[in-house]
Image 1 (cartoon, rainbow, N blue to C red):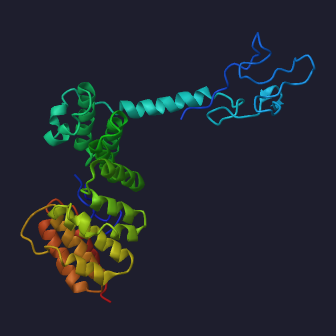
Image 2 (image 1 turned 60 degrees about the vertical axis):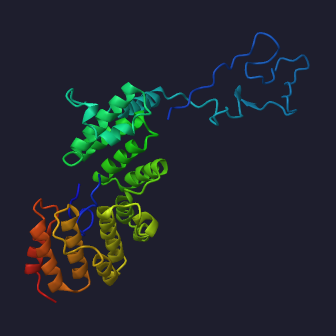
Image 3 (image 1 turned 90 degrees about the vertical axis):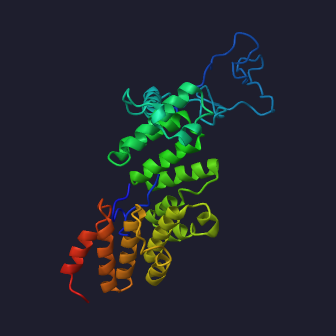
Length: 320
């Protein structure tokens, strides 16, 4: 899911794993008792005066319609908008149905631990949810919008399942829907109690122009719940937020606490080196930045960053 410089130039994104109102019913006077069906006073009393309500106040009517609201808070004379109701139902049904799923996609294609998270659901429902999640995982890199629609279809069937909300958050994140992704990740955290998506949540805050909230995720409590790769991803995001605030030296120092010289080939390695090169450049250390952009290219066989393009730009740009 990582894409360089979208929306920020720091090595890319962290790796992830109403119905319309209707007219009031009734409204005609009842045949007996001198009252209409809503219990309001009838104007045909023998003394010619309207009957008082049970609370002792006169019944206020305008043009034969009661002035007080219905129990749902809407006025009795609100027109029924059948077209709007049908539109709402159609939109909700489309979300529920989701995109088509090929016949050869099976719930067994879902990770074993993920399937266990769906065990509380009825068997047929769990099977459908699992197949939508499989499709979301298959499509998130090449077609994130369709992947997100699959995740939403799963959510429509299992909204209280943390795994499903995580999938909605991750696909929304891949689509660049930062506020929606953050909301879904928060829901998943409440259900699971975990912070495995903290780097992506912090990155959403940064994308929403709230770097201070992104930095707030860098706590010992949260880091204790992340594996090594997750902690590195969090450092990359927090360093970017520091740079957003003009704290370039602080960003450099934070990234220097991570294994920049590792011989590993994890997905986070090119992102870490890229973020470090970018931070060095912002800090006015051009020569060192060029060196680390070269080091990024050396480990970025999948071209998950635009380090090569950045080097070309620096070659064309005159040194200050």
